[in-house]
Image 1: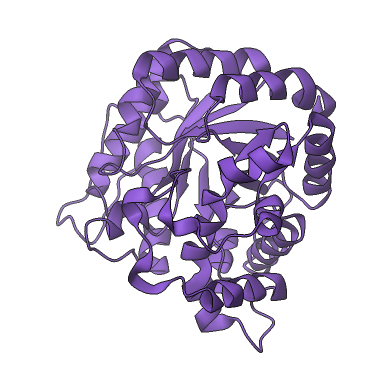
Image 2: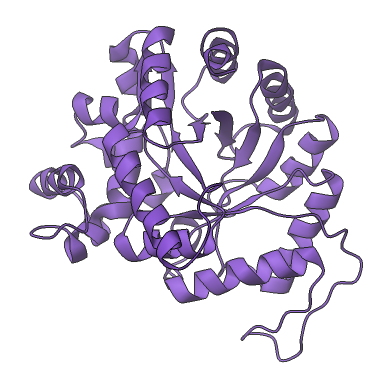
Length: 340
């Protein structure tokens, strides 16, 4: 299993560099960044400086989207970072949630998102690409042509199908073992049905963690189920009850969310991924424990082994809860060695 961390852009640059270096020394494989340019500082400039201070770890946005930048601008940015990092650059792509909705704009549809993934791969590789928003074909002759893995974030059945058809890997923003197995299986089945060889397909589970007593861990991470609920509520509304298109456990969670009066326009994006958030009032300790990884190091190892058995190939920590350096050290000393 690979391991990664993800920053949301609220940590100063010197400390960000130091944590990236600590992650590399601790055995982590990826350093991801949230890409939501209004809520947090720009992630790509920070990736560039971190690349200059590390040798092995890979970088990328977790996640970007096809509507926030002109596609030629995005491809030029990604190709430059791939060059700076000597090929140590991936992208994870979603339809666009916080970075679009905070501006009052809607996310992209799945077809547009899939087209973006294909265009980014080709432009970064040095191919000529024609896309709808640009009258002339785009060709950047200066690119080094590094291969750039493209991950696709998905929960719903149509998004999971697209992830399997176009992605090199699937992003699942939770650490519930049963849900990860279900989501990964849906994406892999869709890719196989499209004629793809899914033998090397990757599945990334991303969630916050807390190493230590569970009560403190719940308090530090309960923002995360609120974020997940906001992402998946529309999916459950459309596909959930009475069908086999959404797992019953996810449908039950959203039903409980609705019963508590949450949802709709009530989600505050200005508190998106904040550990002190008004969005969390309906979150129970049980759902937090399910969606995150909490407890002593041996409990983390046990759950991660279960995720690995369920098909997860990378676990990424949302490093947003405080005690960032301690969490990295605890994983480097007590968790990662069990997977090497």
